[in-house]
Amino acid sequence: MRRFLESDFLYDFLRAPVAIISFCVVSILVLSAIFAQFIAPTNPFDPASLELMNGFTPPMEPNMYTGEVFLLGTDDQGRDLFSAILYGLRISLFVGLMAVSLAMTMGVILGLIAGYVGGWLDNLIMRLADIQMTFPSILIAMLIFGVARGLLPPELRYEMAITVLIISIGLSEWVPFARTVRGSTMVEKEKEYIAAAQLIGLKKWQIMIRHILPNVLGPVLVIATITFALAIIAEATLSFLGVGAPRTEPSLGTLIRVGQDFLFSGEWWILLFPALTLLALALAVNLLGDWLRDTLNPRLK
Amino acid sequence: MLVIIFRRLGQSILVLFLVALISFLIFRYVGNPVDNLMGQEATLAQRAALEEALGLNDPFYKQYFSFVWNALNFDFGNSYRGALPVSDLIASRLPATIELALTSAIFALFFGVITGIYTAIRRGGYLANIILSTSLIGVSLPTFLIGVLLIWLFAVELKWLPSFGRGDVIQLGWWSTGFLTLSGIKSLILPSITLGLYQLTLIMRLTRSEMLEVMRQDYVRFAKALGLSPKQVNYKHALPNTLVPVVTIAGLQLGSIVAFAIVTETVFQWPGVGLLFINAVYFVDIPVMSAYLLLVGVLFVIINLFVDLLYLAIDPRLRDSNSSE
Image (tube, rainbow over all chains, first blue to last red; front, side, top):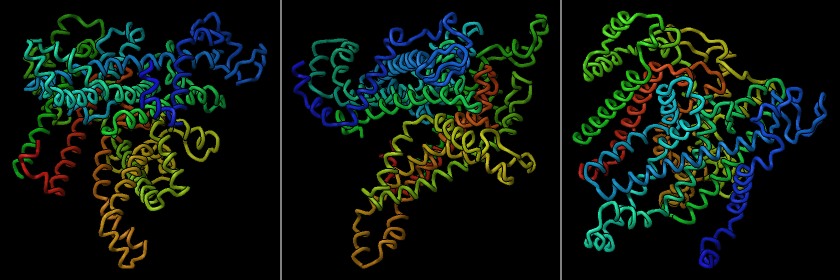
């Protein structure tokens, strides 16, 4: 703790207003997503709590039939929008986090193998990465999502939607991790402590995981932050297109998709508040990632 | 030089075969073609006959090569929905996507270069800083959100522009164009801005940094010392040298414009290939998905190959075959 308080990192952080604001925004959003069931006035997924009469209530105005007031208004089914956004935020963040973890695990393992073992394995992994890099990741995510839907029996398609979403986004983002880890591994591999580890007869996987991995993780965390922002946007895009989170488990993207239907009839709040939440989240994570990159690793700039 | 070109060409062909293999695997093994083509009341004998007719009992490599051969002849099988040939579906949708992609690419290139030059020349100026910080928000904003917000402002509130579709189109042979009618052009504006905005910010940043780099060079300083007006220095000497990398990157971005057209086409219900693809994903229409993958794969490989060869032509340092890896 003392080491952290005296570090350059904290010093830089306290002198970067953009980083502080972004950090606060992200923290508030994450905390309100985690504690959604305590903050949200209603449970938006409990059909018993929905009152159809409350449908289309504008924000901060009493409903014309029931007189109830909602902070951000309600949607067509009388669902409190504030609660729906909190729960949607939770799904968005969950999918983003799991997708990044998957991409990171996969990328780090493949990068370590490519960098340390080398040879044809390295060639195979890196050519695969090259090919994947020529296609935009959102396209790959859509394709994986489509194939997964085709492989699943129809009755499981909605139940498994979130899992499939996580897998498709995760698989589409592993390349930057693998490339960075491979590069640093190849540098670390030449150092003396690795030669020493080889001399005392440690196995390859022991050297990779116990000795190289801790030394290549720095840039990985920076990429993880940036990828997290990408994953959140990818999730929102897929859900908005109708090939992501279903309406029974709406993420922010799904809420925006629903809100778009009511744009023309004048119920602007159903669209606007989820959109603003997503915008704040994406912008804050992006800015935080940029700042981290510039501070921790100027080389990546 | 020739060796490098051939090696590069070989790589591209290899990638194409790999993409074709993936499309084939999706086409053949995701879902069951027989189930999708025949109803539930088909007898086992009928199913067996269809399996034989489709060549599903042939060895793997034979099926793969007949898939590639058919694809080369623009035969991608029939769509599971509506049973139309996939190639007809794609051909009828292609003009819409190409017109949208071209318009937004030109929009992005034109305004990206202009704002890039402006922010470089007026470095630190008031308006230049505003443009730069707005572009940061533009990068973080998801494409679909830009589209939805534009629809809200210009179609719902101001009622200036249509919010969906292509407007009236005119048939020129098999090509349907929206360029020739007023409603077609009006319908094109919002989708093009939505699709091009991200590329615009990218091109702007690139132009700006290249321009700043060039303006530090000696020949620009000498031109100034010679007493040429700032206009002449900026536009006649600095600008042409910044444009080569900018145009290359813009060309590379064409591929991602086509990919992101999926999102824009969905927001605006634009009847292009992207909308066809997303509906195929939604309804698990495997032949359409596989054909789209193949089409986009070919496009990306061609763009990448072209850009690489262009670099080779421009930069002689890359021609040394030893340093090509």
